[in-house]
Length: 225
Ligand code: CA
Image 1 (cartoon, helix red, strand yellow):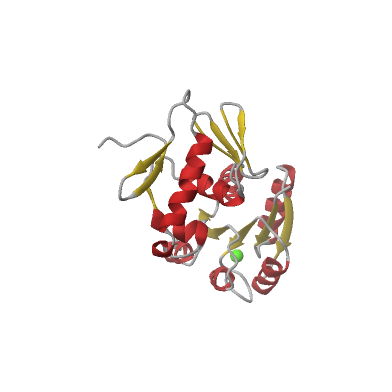
Image 2 (tube, helix red, strand yellow; image 1 turned 120 degrees about the vertical axis):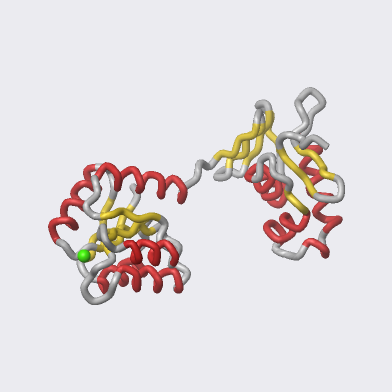
């Protein structure tokens, strides 16, 4: 059950949001002051924060800035007053994921929340044509046949699938998978990609992984020369 922290000093709004979210299947934690909200945000695992900006003790913007400075990336939806355009812009600038202008329809909050949480928990299966990669079980199969992959081969394939129809350079793979600059690794990367290709491709299936000479690789459609 997703857990939502609501930081709001107007009791009526706080209570009705908490009740509404609970009815919609969320677990809620509430705080009515800035310092309390900040303390809970740091101390408890939450999946999303609904953060009013005008709060006693510490403003929502200060809380947000401090959370982001502390490396906390929890999705935050800020609640702003209709005339506070600057706050909205500042909030988004310092790391809010979305905002709602008061008064807002509860259904809209639910919709924003759903989008936010989907982004946080992406579907655990990547699919390209007949190729499927299960990111939780870390298994690959194509056209119904399991493809045994090593950890690194799996990571390379997942990266290529996430960049469907986009050219992936060796530099990108070096940085993202090996966490090293590409120039130290060019040959290693080629070896891995070729190994993935051999495991992936079958003569009776359409080719999926293409080499772009001198540039890198592309999974999906081969770009026209
Ligand atoms: Ca307020």
